[in-house]
Length: 519
Image (cartoon, rainbow, N blue to C red; front, top):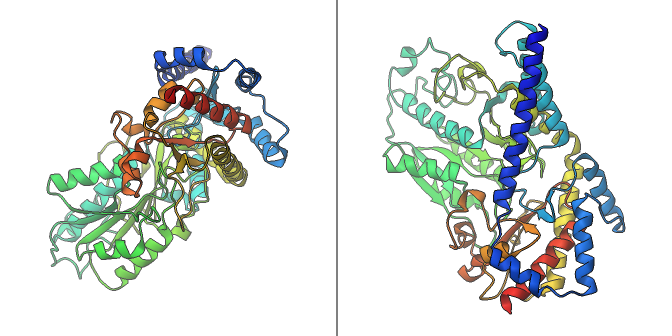
């Protein structure tokens, strides 16, 4: 027994070392900077007392120290920072929390404890397996509590992309089965195969003689690629018809009437994100769901199912599936200080809402998502969800006050005429942490500005679009932002521990970079 304990301990140590090396490599890659710009900055930055002050400030930030002279707002930041220090790499400050987040210390501890103590197969009866099963059960409870659902409504996945694909797969499979006579009886013996048959959207007596043709899906034109490209592929391969509803160029969100106009007799799925990753606009999911449900009451088949990808919302705003009224909700761990793992909320999987597996195996996750469970990552997801439930009010208030301070400083330094915010839309609520802005000028394209910054680590938009070169974000263009403004866009997203000192250092860095590029 001692032999196996030593082996497990050694494996845990090796795993942690590999993880640290992995994170370091990512940081080095992410911190790559245009060397010419760096050289110019070093030679052109004024050697004034303010510059010296900024240098001292960078050193202070790199040691996790905070300016304590900013009143109650900073006091909140200090309380949050005690749990999670400011994310910096040397003198560089990370403001790209919409792309990904570091693990909370408590999450790292939960993952490490699972690696050491719950390494057994959760389907086994011995102690290590029982511990793993118990951890998974608790994590399921914690994730369900975070979104206001039931534990049995949570299905763990590898991440948001798999969860989104699982939704589309399930809805299309349900549409096909509910439109073909005789499928219900031929699959009655298979629990996973009948998941959709048992739902109100599955085959029942009044639908078996109807064939409304190909399924129709509605998405918005600002969806994440894990929704957008799935829909496009289904349309390209002739498996579904797809309508892409444009967001309003005034509000930046999907309007109810625009969605209703797109509904067809064969519409079976609406998939609209809860909050946009670039503009921060929060979609009116509750109102959209209510109106879709009204449509469902007026027709017998097919039932229109509603899915929302909540990746950007969780950990930033209150999310309650009962209040929203959705059938599916995607959960992405690495957006709220959890590991890179995900889950899918399904309102009554297999009974109230159809859910069909994309692949088959050992029967884990009630046959909806087979494969031996990744216990350590699930434990980390559960701990992160528990922290969100306990601390969301503090998290949200701190991020909002920090983001407002960032916007204030940008206007003070560059002037309101030179700064344009693409995260401000009249009549729309936005995420508390997201600031999308452009500094106007012919030489201030977003990617060029970022490549010349000595301190700021951020992005011009979605991380998954980082290979598109200097093309303006299609998300901003879709929201009515002009090409000239969109080309200069920077997306800064603050985190739980981002301080006013961090903001001051970043704005000073931007000031120096703009001076350089305009000289």
